[in-house]
Image (cartoon, rainbow over all chains, first blue to last red):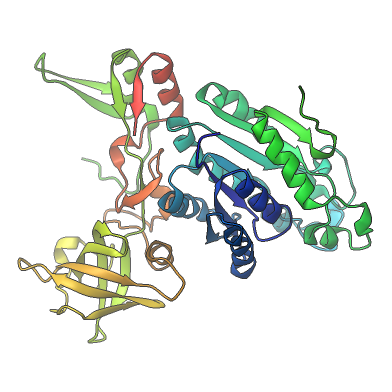
Length: 239
Length: 202
């Protein structure tokens, strides 16, 4: 990893995003944290700064098509080139999660705006700098819903499956340019988002986001990035 | 001449004038032809400026509406700018009314903050230096994205969004108009040029 590399994490206000912020700070990254809620972002940033780290916050909705250039420009202004981009912000869609027959097309559009078009626009806004600079890594947070058919999860699942396949194509296109891409299924975690989707879940059966974050950082360190789709709970660093 | 209505983007098909000062030759080509013209030892320099929204609707102390158009960033939160009277991009710039004659310290109010006159150029009251006064806790640049819109001109048929006026390598936010020379370039071309031994710098 380049010394003093900078990472941009979306959905960094809570859950896996916050855990990744702490894990990447410990790994030496300067951080740009993006989310919709300033108070949550500032809590993450404070945690990082209290631990001696460098964190900048950008309040933004990645689902808004006008936000990607603003996010990229503000990030460039405070940290320069981004070497690591983590697409973690996700929308579940309407709650309780409806069958597809009951899902309004506009709601599907909104889920795709956040989970697919947002990451696509932000990658496009950042990747040229990676190609022309020191290379980089782009991580797409996925879900096992992207490969299994769970009733009620159609919008989220389809958006994650599409994002996974863009990841594979990005990797195929830019591998020789020194930019790595991979997707990771973090498994079921004890987070607010999981509670929204499955309020009756037993938290003791859910993974700690900090442990998942540590595995993702290990994947990055191990040089993963040829478009793989990895499952955090099953990933072992090969010798 | 057919006037442009909105920023076009023909990409690698964009016409390109090739000037060879040593051979005293001038030739018409297309941007995509660069791969045939360049090789090892050649250098392509791309402009990586991001286009910031540089036009702000402001209100002078008199209550009169003005437009502030940023020109050059001097340091964080201080810019050289052009101040015009009422109107916006839909009117021809030459026909815009003059601004109020403002002194140092005067404030131009924008939503949630202000621009304070730091200096007025002796050549014209239209040319000023302003200091950003954003709301508490908000950086000058962050505030600019909130209150400003892209600079554009009366030939355009509709308002431009900031995302529509970025070059392909936009990164560092300091340009107030799109670095148009690089707009037809494509990452695919840059990769081919590098594979052919051409150096690409920012």
